Length: 287
Length: 287
Image (cartoon, rainbow over all chains, first blue to last red; front, side, top):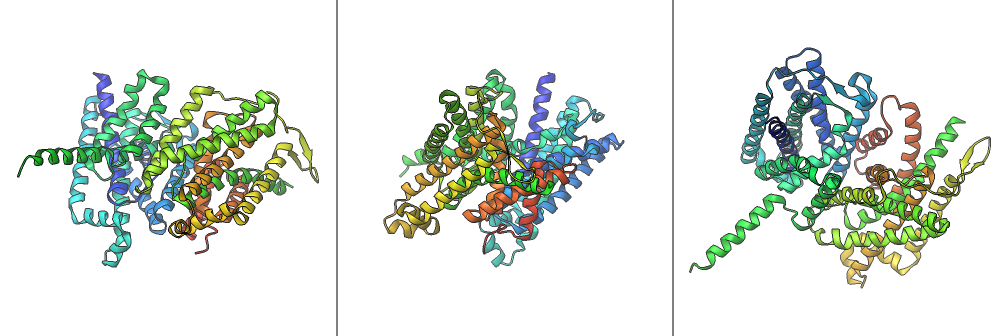
């Protein structure tokens, strides 16, 4: 039973984290190759504050606010650079985060932070909390997608210049996407830190950023259900892959490549085209 | 004296960056793909280089073999991997490329072992005094001369041969070039061949300088070369050269003076972000 609880908790954190990136990259079209930095900021902020004696729930709020503020600062950069330039800039932010944490003894340096205090929740209760937060993030995503804000996001993702011509304040909306997305990543980071009780700079590097981006892309960019399913699958994949052990990353990298090569729309795209062809076959007999 | 030494070290590193980033910028200029898997061809070249040298004892033969094999592999990556997804949004090719790189790194590890290969009798390792007590490894001098030579040859080919001119025409206006009878397919193949051969060239040198070829040797160049082509103003050859050399020097000074605050990668990306915030179009781009 303990194993399943750990697995479900990891799944919940991954879904929350992937949905947070989906808000920025999926809805608003701002690609980020350094999103793990915000997971890290949330994790470090909450770990340090609970170690300083703050209660867990306060630490989560602090992690959310702190990651969101840094997210807005990085979002400011996205107002200057676009598309491929933004991809590389956010990748740089990821490396900068790891580079800074690694050299600061106050942040644990290479060794990271261990002995993160208990949350006061039992392990099943923590799992339930994680899953509830993931569900809230999914509900929030769907709400935003249907609201005015989501339509503007979609417009910016499609064609930012046209949105500006229409008189829409695109920069503010982009900043909002970064603020919400990174704040959610901060929450995911806080859960991550208190789930594992240990964090180090290596846990928030480039590979993590790519992993979460691949969850979004494999799920189908912008699709809430697709991304949640992909995050759930990809987060437990390494555990299932224990059987193939040595070839784990090979399969992972290969899957990523094949998915993009043959089904760039992701799971959502596969599902949509399956529905379409089924409709076509059912409609064929009708006059 | 320290300054001269740091500049010299920076130039050696910069030349290697230049050789890697040039291939990347060729690909970007032509197809707008951020080709992360380029670093896999760099590693492949290094492996072919060390294997050939150890088998035949000839370094020259090793360079020829490495550049040929990587060049052909590069064309294969383009034909099988990128060609079918050229019309998709840019992140599709980016993620496919990252997946390919992860898988390739694992293949190198599984085939050649995790601990890496060394030269049996590494050539060009003795120290040469230049002036005022400054010493260089023979290999370091050879890297600088070799890179300068190969760039000169490329510049000559690009400006003085029909194929070179066709390549330039295709970069500036593919449709117009095609209507003048330029084969787009051929130009793209040549671009990937030359770019990948350049990566292999750099790979053999890095293997020689460190006397070690390991599966993960491409991971740092993979990201840093992206930073360099962005600094150089994506797609500009001269800009890329200058950016590579500048970054080499900035890093060698940075590790001495900022080493306590940031690690080497973070210095490179801090510089990148600082430049992009001031000049979003890259350091040396004209517009």
